[in-house]
Image 1: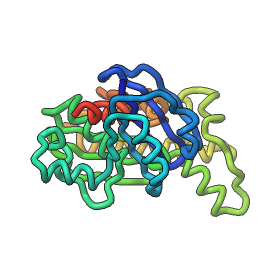
Image 2: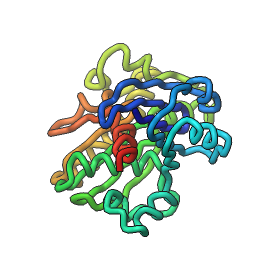
Image 3: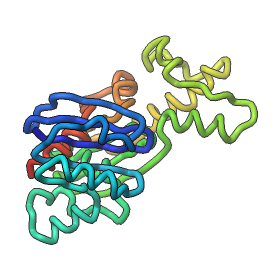
Length: 246
């Protein structure tokens, strides 16, 4: 049994894999008490984190496995320089590339090695990755859905903090009007539909590319899109599971 840990900006996912089969998934807000959550031993543990390095956490995880992988840009470059073909998909990663983005790119290449891909990841940030037949080209980063709502509340005097999920609970994305008639609907038109229009703009600019959506909000935006859109909710975790076996 292997364990993969994805520590993001706002939450932490802990997943147990038997080979490539997901056996269990936990989501916690605080990554500092993982030693209280993880008690069994594993063959391999893979850690992906976008936060500051935590030596104590790494030591704790190393004691719980036979093989520990601190998955980051330095690890990837070390494996590529050593001629490890398993990481050939990641041979064009720029400085500062996030571990979660690399894991998502890695898994997208495994799923569609001969395709040109547009990969959207919806989390704290909305990221877009361009992949040409297993070769990473580049990408973009913008604000995620919840981040947009929070930023408006933080930087304005009169906009309260509204949770977009309360708007979405009333119906799917296709029911949202482009014309807002009160605060909630104006925020939905500008932010929820804003991301939808952003996705559609990329898809129109690159119609030949296959589209993959992942991240916590992927299922929100998929129903509002036309064409062949593939949703892979656990793309990052599945990528880390592959890395555990590499």
